[in-house]
Figure 1 (cartoon, helix red, strand yellow):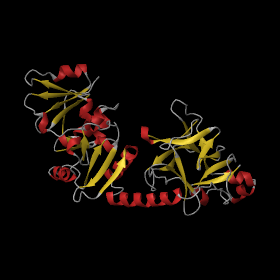
Figure 2 (cartoon, rainbow, N blue to C red):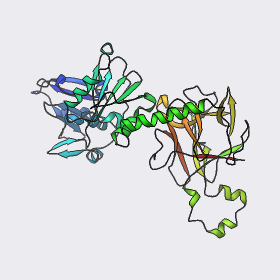
Figure 3 (cartoon, rainbow, N blue to C red):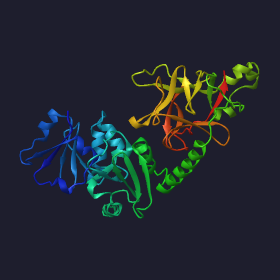
Figure 4 (cartoon, rainbow, N blue to C red):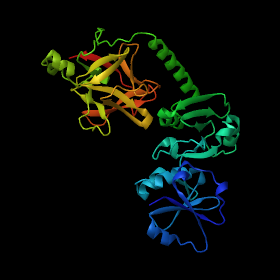
Amino acid sequence: MEPIIFVPEYVNVSNIDQCLLDKHVTFCPIDSKTFDAGAQLEQRKRFIVLEKDYFDAYFHRGRPDKCSYQSRNAIMAFMWRPCDWMDFYLNFLIVDGVVGFAMPPVHYFVCANDSDDFNLNSPADDNTIVEYFDRDYGSDFAKFARVVKDKPYCVQNYFIVNVCQTYHAVKTDDVSIRYTFDKDVKYQVIELLVKKSATIEELIEKDALLSEAKADTDNLPFQLRDSEGNVVADGTKFSLQIVGSWEEDEDIDEADLANLTERELLYHNREWLAFNIFSGPEEGHTIGCLYEDGSEFTCETIDGIVYLKFEDMYFYNDLSNNKYGLFVGKDVPTKRQRVRIEYTEDGNLILRSWESRVLAANEFMKSSCGIIKFNLRETPYYGHPSMRLRIIRR
């Protein structure tokens, strides 16, 4: 059933901060004297009734929860997910009888003509308030900063401006300091700022270093090399070994290791890239990671660009569609889909989205297998560092 917000005659909606989710709900005027909340609960499990200084959230139960307007988008986003009221109280705080989110909302300024869609269940979009502006008037960052300063209940050190597919994270006290990025990395960039894992200045500096490194490698003919430094020719079969903590394994008995052949020793207790047999072509076949068993890969050079391959399928990424995995497909990837191969200072390989600063990272979901996702930064992704690889010939 469509999310609905009931608006009594004494509430002026224009006096309330807008939310990204407002584009996906229906505002329904009501007469407060005749409105029957109980009857509405029989028709729908959850809805909201606005009041002047707060709003009531009806969520599975007969009595409403009094909620703070500064957390309206976060609360609405949670209410319309498939969850129960116990989850609701685990995710929000109650202060002086009013439900609210633990952190202040981020202020978005969005061009009304071409704003992208709200992404439910994303920390980058959930805890926000928004103002829309006309493209003809341009992005007045100084004006936006003044708006944020007049709302002390918002995040004060930065705000987000969205025009078409371009985003700016702007420092409130100095609007000349801003980090520009595109939709491909929107959620990762904003989540870094929200979680205080990075500042705008740090993102700018990191981006400059990556751009400089990219410019250096673009001017050189790239050659794929194995773990011993030998060039890997097109069609040569190899495995991709993940360089990690296994190199200092203290749980393996030396006597057991002595009984392993050289080949068994190479594969024992190691992590490898592997084709995911469980992913279907309708979603895009994916590359994952396994312990002690990796797939066989090759490479192909087209117009000077080296592509990694599994059988007759090319490695690619699909960040433009908010898919952060590592995929393989029959078609030669477009420039936007390419996976860039780069060397680290220690001679290992890293995989990067071709046109952005997004790195591939591995995360083991179970004891024997895991997933690969493209991550914005070279610091831990769910506790795992960005993935380093070495080529082992088959």
